[in-house]
Length: 108
Image (cartoon, rainbow, N blue to C red):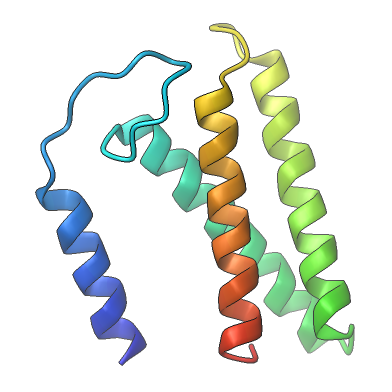
């Protein structure tokens, strides 16, 4: 069921036309924002699952994963040659929050 839902979400996003967006805009169809969201989601989910498998309580695992991901993402944005982008940071936050919800919803 999760695989089907994930595939449907990917197909829906992939079917949307990609339009160039300014660095500070948040447009979910922008490939850069999708990459920020996906990397933040994957990093948060991976850290949370690994931590929870090492007997860290789920809420602590999610807190550690979210904090680590957001610190890394913010550092990347602050050192980016093109300057800080609130749109990229919003995508990072959405990806991190979504992964946290998945960990709690599916008791990973």
